[in-house]
Image (cartoon, rainbow, N blue to C red):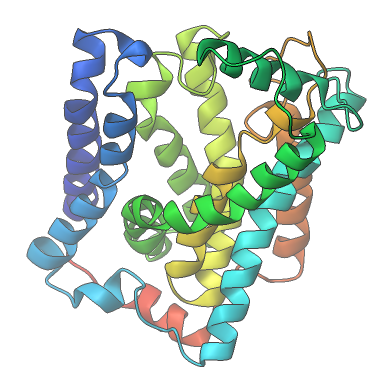
Length: 307
Protein backbone atom coordinates (compact mmCIF):
# COMPACT_ATOMS: atom_id res chain seq x y z
CA UNK A 1 0.00 0.00 0.00
CA UNK A 2 2.87 2.39 0.78
CA UNK A 3 4.28 2.03 -2.75
CA UNK A 4 0.86 2.69 -4.28
CA UNK A 5 0.21 5.77 -2.16
CA UNK A 6 3.63 7.21 -3.00
CA UNK A 7 3.09 6.53 -6.69
CA UNK A 8 -0.31 8.25 -6.68
CA UNK A 9 0.97 11.21 -4.68
CA UNK A 10 3.84 11.84 -7.07
CA UNK A 11 1.97 11.26 -10.34
CA UNK A 12 -1.09 13.31 -9.35
CA UNK A 13 0.90 15.94 -7.45
CA UNK A 14 3.32 16.60 -10.30
CA UNK A 15 0.49 16.81 -12.81
CA UNK A 16 -1.42 19.40 -10.80
CA UNK A 17 1.79 21.34 -10.23
CA UNK A 18 2.60 21.38 -13.93
CA UNK A 19 -0.97 22.42 -14.81
CA UNK A 20 -1.07 25.21 -12.21
CA UNK A 21 -0.11 27.95 -14.72
CA UNK A 22 -3.26 27.12 -16.71
CA UNK A 23 -5.45 27.50 -13.61
CA UNK A 24 -3.78 30.74 -12.60
CA UNK A 25 -3.77 32.11 -16.16
CA UNK A 26 -5.92 31.77 -19.27
CA UNK A 27 -6.86 28.11 -18.93
CA UNK A 28 -6.89 26.27 -22.24
CA UNK A 29 -6.33 29.57 -24.07
CA UNK A 30 -2.88 29.80 -22.53
CA UNK A 31 0.07 29.61 -24.96
CA UNK A 32 1.58 27.13 -22.50
CA UNK A 33 -1.14 24.53 -23.07
CA UNK A 34 0.87 22.22 -25.32
CA UNK A 35 3.94 22.44 -23.09
CA UNK A 36 1.83 21.71 -20.01
CA UNK A 37 0.00 18.80 -21.61
CA UNK A 38 3.19 17.14 -22.82
CA UNK A 39 5.05 17.73 -19.57
CA UNK A 40 2.18 16.25 -17.56
CA UNK A 41 2.58 13.00 -19.48
CA UNK A 42 5.97 12.37 -17.87
CA UNK A 43 4.64 12.58 -14.31
CA UNK A 44 3.57 8.88 -14.15
CA UNK A 45 7.02 7.81 -15.37
CA UNK A 46 8.73 9.89 -12.69
CA UNK A 47 6.44 8.39 -10.06
CA UNK A 48 7.09 4.85 -11.28
CA UNK A 49 10.85 5.34 -11.38
CA UNK A 50 10.91 6.73 -7.84
CA UNK A 51 8.79 3.90 -6.45
CA UNK A 52 10.68 1.12 -8.20
CA UNK A 53 14.13 2.50 -7.43
CA UNK A 54 13.71 3.81 -3.90
CA UNK A 55 10.67 2.05 -2.41
CA UNK A 56 10.57 -1.41 -3.98
CA UNK A 57 14.31 -1.43 -4.82
CA UNK A 58 13.78 -3.60 -7.88
CA UNK A 59 15.48 -3.56 -11.33
CA UNK A 60 13.95 -0.61 -13.15
CA UNK A 61 13.89 -1.85 -16.75
CA UNK A 62 12.37 -5.24 -15.96
CA UNK A 63 9.96 -3.88 -13.36
CA UNK A 64 8.50 -1.33 -15.76
CA UNK A 65 8.17 -3.67 -18.74
CA UNK A 66 11.01 -2.26 -20.82
CA UNK A 67 12.42 -5.75 -21.42
CA UNK A 68 10.86 -8.89 -22.96
CA UNK A 69 11.28 -7.64 -26.52
CA UNK A 70 12.58 -10.87 -28.00
CA UNK A 71 11.97 -12.61 -30.32
CA UNK A 72 12.11 -9.53 -32.48
CA UNK A 73 9.53 -10.76 -34.99
CA UNK A 74 6.95 -11.15 -32.24
CA UNK A 75 7.89 -7.77 -30.79
CA UNK A 76 7.39 -5.91 -34.07
CA UNK A 77 4.21 -7.86 -34.73
CA UNK A 78 2.74 -6.55 -31.49
CA UNK A 79 3.92 -3.04 -32.33
CA UNK A 80 2.08 -3.24 -35.65
CA UNK A 81 -1.05 -4.41 -33.87
CA UNK A 82 -0.60 -1.66 -31.29
CA UNK A 83 -0.71 0.93 -34.05
CA UNK A 84 -3.60 -0.53 -36.03
CA UNK A 85 -6.05 -1.33 -33.22
CA UNK A 86 -6.38 2.17 -31.69
CA UNK A 87 -6.75 3.80 -35.12
CA UNK A 88 -9.47 1.33 -36.08
CA UNK A 89 -11.28 1.95 -32.79
CA UNK A 90 -11.21 5.70 -33.39
CA UNK A 91 -12.58 5.25 -36.89
CA UNK A 92 -15.20 2.70 -35.82
CA UNK A 93 -16.61 5.14 -33.29
CA UNK A 94 -17.71 7.53 -36.04
CA UNK A 95 -20.28 5.41 -37.91
CA UNK A 96 -21.58 4.15 -34.55
CA UNK A 97 -22.21 7.73 -33.44
CA UNK A 98 -23.77 8.47 -36.82
CA UNK A 99 -26.10 5.49 -36.40
CA UNK A 100 -27.30 6.98 -33.10
CA UNK A 101 -27.80 10.37 -34.75
CA UNK A 102 -24.96 11.91 -32.74
CA UNK A 103 -22.61 12.62 -35.64
CA UNK A 104 -23.32 13.57 -39.25
CA UNK A 105 -20.68 12.34 -41.67
CA UNK A 106 -19.67 13.60 -45.09
CA UNK A 107 -17.49 10.97 -46.75
CA UNK A 108 -17.67 12.52 -50.23
CA UNK A 109 -17.10 16.25 -50.02
CA UNK A 110 -15.61 16.32 -46.51
CA UNK A 111 -17.48 19.60 -46.07
CA UNK A 112 -16.72 20.06 -42.39
CA UNK A 113 -13.01 19.63 -42.92
CA UNK A 114 -13.23 21.99 -45.90
CA UNK A 115 -14.67 24.63 -43.56
CA UNK A 116 -11.79 24.14 -41.16
CA UNK A 117 -9.24 24.51 -43.93
CA UNK A 118 -10.95 27.64 -45.29
CA UNK A 119 -11.09 29.20 -41.83
CA UNK A 120 -7.41 28.54 -41.30
CA UNK A 121 -6.56 30.07 -44.64
CA UNK A 122 -8.61 33.13 -43.78
CA UNK A 123 -6.73 33.54 -40.50
CA UNK A 124 -3.44 33.29 -42.39
CA UNK A 125 -4.66 35.85 -44.95
CA UNK A 126 -4.90 33.34 -47.80
CA UNK A 127 -7.47 33.01 -50.53
CA UNK A 128 -10.94 31.67 -49.95
CA UNK A 129 -10.06 28.11 -50.94
CA UNK A 130 -6.95 25.97 -51.11
CA UNK A 131 -5.91 24.75 -54.58
CA UNK A 132 -5.29 21.17 -53.43
CA UNK A 133 -8.40 18.93 -53.58
CA UNK A 134 -9.86 18.34 -50.16
CA UNK A 135 -9.61 14.58 -50.70
CA UNK A 136 -5.83 14.91 -50.99
CA UNK A 137 -5.70 16.91 -47.77
CA UNK A 138 -7.71 14.21 -46.02
CA UNK A 139 -5.27 11.55 -47.26
CA UNK A 140 -2.35 13.65 -46.00
CA UNK A 141 -3.97 13.91 -42.59
CA UNK A 142 -4.23 10.13 -42.47
CA UNK A 143 -0.51 9.92 -43.27
CA UNK A 144 0.09 12.38 -40.43
CA UNK A 145 -1.50 9.87 -38.05
CA UNK A 146 1.37 7.49 -38.79
CA UNK A 147 3.95 10.22 -38.25
CA UNK A 148 2.16 11.47 -35.15
CA UNK A 149 2.09 8.00 -33.65
CA UNK A 150 5.87 7.80 -33.77
CA UNK A 151 6.36 11.36 -32.52
CA UNK A 152 3.89 10.74 -29.70
CA UNK A 153 5.69 7.59 -28.60
CA UNK A 154 8.05 9.44 -26.24
CA UNK A 155 5.45 11.34 -24.17
CA UNK A 156 3.10 8.35 -24.38
CA UNK A 157 5.85 6.19 -22.90
CA UNK A 158 6.03 8.74 -20.09
CA UNK A 159 2.46 7.80 -19.17
CA UNK A 160 2.62 4.10 -19.94
CA UNK A 161 5.68 3.48 -17.78
CA UNK A 162 3.40 4.48 -14.94
CA UNK A 163 -0.04 3.17 -15.87
CA UNK A 164 0.67 -0.12 -17.62
CA UNK A 165 4.36 -0.39 -16.78
CA UNK A 166 4.07 -0.18 -12.99
CA UNK A 167 0.48 0.35 -11.79
CA UNK A 168 -1.24 -2.50 -13.64
CA UNK A 169 1.23 -5.22 -12.55
CA UNK A 170 1.27 -3.78 -9.02
CA UNK A 171 -2.51 -4.08 -8.77
CA UNK A 172 -2.47 -7.55 -10.34
CA UNK A 173 -0.25 -8.80 -7.52
CA UNK A 174 -3.03 -7.90 -5.10
CA UNK A 175 -6.28 -8.54 -6.91
CA UNK A 176 -7.91 -10.23 -9.89
CA UNK A 177 -6.75 -9.14 -13.33
CA UNK A 178 -10.19 -7.70 -14.22
CA UNK A 179 -10.20 -5.56 -11.09
CA UNK A 180 -6.64 -4.41 -11.77
CA UNK A 181 -7.52 -3.41 -15.34
CA UNK A 182 -10.61 -1.46 -14.27
CA UNK A 183 -8.99 0.26 -11.28
CA UNK A 184 -5.92 1.28 -13.28
CA UNK A 185 -8.20 2.71 -15.96
CA UNK A 186 -10.23 4.70 -13.43
CA UNK A 187 -7.06 6.11 -11.87
CA UNK A 188 -5.74 6.99 -15.31
CA UNK A 189 -8.94 8.88 -16.08
CA UNK A 190 -8.94 10.79 -12.79
CA UNK A 191 -5.31 11.76 -13.37
CA UNK A 192 -6.46 13.90 -16.35
CA UNK A 193 -8.50 16.15 -14.04
CA UNK A 194 -6.14 19.19 -14.15
CA UNK A 195 -6.89 19.77 -17.83
CA UNK A 196 -10.24 18.01 -18.29
CA UNK A 197 -11.89 20.21 -15.64
CA UNK A 198 -10.80 23.19 -17.75
CA UNK A 199 -12.60 21.81 -20.82
CA UNK A 200 -9.89 19.70 -22.43
CA UNK A 201 -11.40 16.99 -24.69
CA UNK A 202 -14.95 17.96 -23.64
CA UNK A 203 -15.36 21.70 -24.34
CA UNK A 204 -19.18 21.69 -24.32
CA UNK A 205 -19.68 19.68 -21.11
CA UNK A 206 -19.76 20.78 -17.50
CA UNK A 207 -16.46 20.10 -15.70
CA UNK A 208 -17.69 17.16 -13.63
CA UNK A 209 -19.59 15.52 -16.48
CA UNK A 210 -16.40 15.87 -18.52
CA UNK A 211 -14.31 14.20 -15.81
CA UNK A 212 -16.75 11.31 -15.37
CA UNK A 213 -16.79 10.79 -19.13
CA UNK A 214 -13.00 10.89 -19.25
CA UNK A 215 -12.85 8.23 -16.56
CA UNK A 216 -15.20 6.06 -18.61
CA UNK A 217 -13.13 6.56 -21.75
CA UNK A 218 -9.86 5.78 -20.02
CA UNK A 219 -11.31 2.69 -18.37
CA UNK A 220 -12.44 1.26 -21.71
CA UNK A 221 -9.40 2.25 -23.77
CA UNK A 222 -7.12 1.43 -20.85
CA UNK A 223 -8.40 -2.15 -20.95
CA UNK A 224 -7.24 -2.41 -24.57
CA UNK A 225 -3.84 -1.00 -23.62
CA UNK A 226 -3.69 -3.45 -20.69
CA UNK A 227 -4.31 -6.34 -23.07
CA UNK A 228 -1.40 -5.15 -25.23
CA UNK A 229 0.80 -4.90 -22.14
CA UNK A 230 -0.01 -8.39 -20.90
CA UNK A 231 0.09 -10.19 -24.23
CA UNK A 232 3.20 -8.48 -25.59
CA UNK A 233 4.97 -8.77 -22.24
CA UNK A 234 6.38 -5.25 -22.44
CA UNK A 235 5.37 -1.59 -22.17
CA UNK A 236 6.38 -0.61 -25.70
CA UNK A 237 3.19 -1.93 -27.29
CA UNK A 238 0.78 0.06 -25.07
CA UNK A 239 3.05 3.10 -25.41
CA UNK A 240 2.80 2.99 -29.21
CA UNK A 241 -0.94 2.32 -28.94
CA UNK A 242 -1.27 5.36 -26.69
CA UNK A 243 0.69 7.46 -29.18
CA UNK A 244 -1.44 6.22 -32.08
CA UNK A 245 -4.63 6.85 -30.14
CA UNK A 246 -3.62 10.43 -29.39
CA UNK A 247 -2.62 10.99 -33.02
CA UNK A 248 -5.91 9.61 -34.36
CA UNK A 249 -8.37 10.88 -31.73
CA UNK A 250 -9.17 14.04 -33.68
CA UNK A 251 -9.92 12.29 -36.97
CA UNK A 252 -13.64 13.02 -36.61
CA UNK A 253 -12.84 16.51 -37.91
CA UNK A 254 -12.00 14.98 -41.30
CA UNK A 255 -15.38 13.31 -41.77
CA UNK A 256 -17.88 15.60 -40.08
CA UNK A 257 -20.49 17.35 -42.22
CA UNK A 258 -20.40 21.14 -42.42
CA UNK A 259 -22.51 22.94 -39.86
CA UNK A 260 -22.74 19.90 -37.56
CA UNK A 261 -22.32 20.38 -33.83
CA UNK A 262 -20.55 17.69 -31.85
CA UNK A 263 -20.74 16.68 -28.20
CA UNK A 264 -17.66 14.61 -27.38
CA UNK A 265 -19.28 13.19 -24.25
CA UNK A 266 -21.57 11.29 -26.63
CA UNK A 267 -19.80 11.01 -30.00
CA UNK A 268 -16.25 10.05 -31.08
CA UNK A 269 -14.15 7.48 -29.25
CA UNK A 270 -14.11 9.79 -26.21
CA UNK A 271 -17.91 9.64 -25.77
CA UNK A 272 -20.20 6.83 -24.66
CA UNK A 273 -21.11 5.72 -28.18
CA UNK A 274 -17.43 5.33 -28.96
CA UNK A 275 -17.01 2.83 -26.15
CA UNK A 276 -19.31 0.25 -27.74
CA UNK A 277 -16.84 -1.27 -30.21
CA UNK A 278 -13.93 -1.33 -27.73
CA UNK A 279 -16.23 -2.93 -25.15
CA UNK A 280 -17.12 -5.68 -27.61
CA UNK A 281 -13.43 -6.21 -28.36
CA UNK A 282 -12.62 -6.39 -24.65
CA UNK A 283 -15.41 -8.90 -24.06
CA UNK A 284 -14.09 -11.13 -26.85
CA UNK A 285 -10.53 -10.85 -25.54
CA UNK A 286 -11.63 -11.69 -22.01
CA UNK A 287 -13.74 -14.65 -23.16
CA UNK A 288 -10.80 -16.10 -25.07
CA UNK A 289 -8.33 -15.68 -22.20
CA UNK A 290 -6.32 -12.92 -23.85
CA UNK A 291 -5.68 -11.09 -20.58
CA UNK A 292 -3.57 -13.91 -19.16
CA UNK A 293 -0.34 -12.51 -20.53
CA UNK A 294 2.95 -14.12 -21.55
CA UNK A 295 4.53 -16.57 -19.09
CA UNK A 296 7.59 -14.32 -18.70
CA UNK A 297 5.37 -11.31 -18.09
CA UNK A 298 3.33 -13.23 -15.52
CA UNK A 299 6.51 -14.05 -13.61
CA UNK A 300 7.34 -10.35 -13.38
CA UNK A 301 3.78 -9.51 -12.35
CA UNK A 302 3.92 -12.11 -9.61
CA UNK A 303 7.29 -10.92 -8.31
CA UNK A 304 7.11 -9.59 -4.72
CA UNK A 305 7.38 -5.88 -4.03
CA UNK A 306 7.55 -3.66 -0.99
CA UNK A 307 4.29 -2.47 0.50
